[in-house]
Image (cartoon, rainbow, N blue to C red; front, side, top):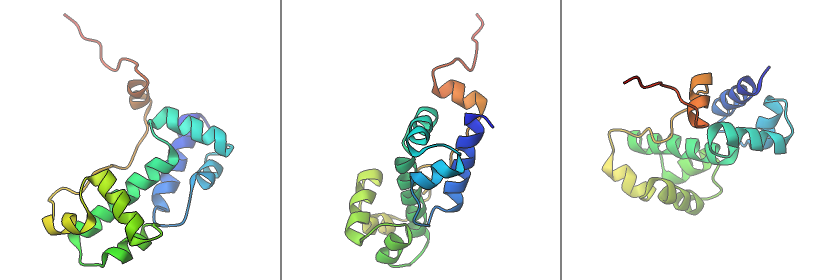
Length: 137
């Protein structure tokens, strides 16, 4: 199993357990790597740390719940592994640019902020600066 397959397996596992209390150590186990090595390989392949990826995906999931439902903000915060409504609001405002309450009031049409990541050879070449197209003049 190569690095691409290992990281994709960890990404899939992270997505399946997004609302669980998981961290990068568990993701490292899914990729059959040490936590340090997993962190380094994940960041080099995706452009972000495993923790940042989880946080952004959780905030995106929370934003979708806020836009489409009436569940209390504290319930959404706790469900998405934030310790308090205050820490959730701070992270939400930093990432989304507005408070959860204001976001809910605006009811945006598009709430997909950080899409689920799928790694492919072509995308990996593109992310690492390789050419994916050859222009012909």
